[in-house]
Amino acid sequence: MDARVTEVLELYHARMQEERSRPRVEPRGGRDGGSDQRMRAVSPETGQLLNILVKSLAAPVILELGTSFGYSGIWLAEAARASGGQLITMELHGYKSQYAEEMAMRAGLADWIDFRVGDAVQLIAGLTGKVDFVFVDLWKDLYVPCLKAFYGKLNGGAVVVADNMLMPGTEDVRAYGRAIRALPGIQSVLLPVGTGIKVSRYEVG
Image 1 (cartoon, rainbow, N blue to C red):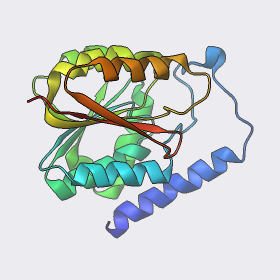
Image 2: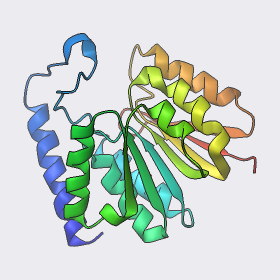
Image 3: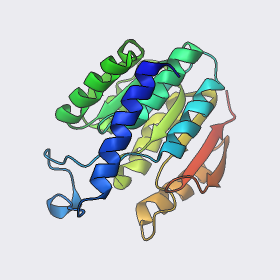
């Protein structure tokens, strides 16, 4: 990883550390109403694993569902650059996507990222090509609808990673686990990295 990427990751890590030191305040109803400033980022270990997985693929088209403020996207885009791929990242809120784009420019990675803003399920439906890697990390009730939307767009050998799979009391992530196991051609493993990730591979071409 070059110095520009490392510098940006360190800026994110400092923001994450500062966030953890403050009382946790959720938006009204627990949902982001367009003013939430919490990072909601993956752990650095999860970011590293995403980076390693993407680098195992040749020129992958990567789909990230839930840009947030762009931390995981730095890990994914650095891997895209290294492997000759491209990242498409989707976020509901424009202010988060804009921040993520500014940080990607600072890291020298913006040329490898296509930032899209809007409803994830609708944006997935509008994809014209297929994808080789999917990272699912948005509101948990959207995990299954997004899975249904992107399943038909997976290339053979595609890898799907879903975050927060070991969070307690979250029925939506359990529903995702059941749904992806039920799909033809999918093999999955649950790993205790960060808040738990389910790594799946699509075997059908």
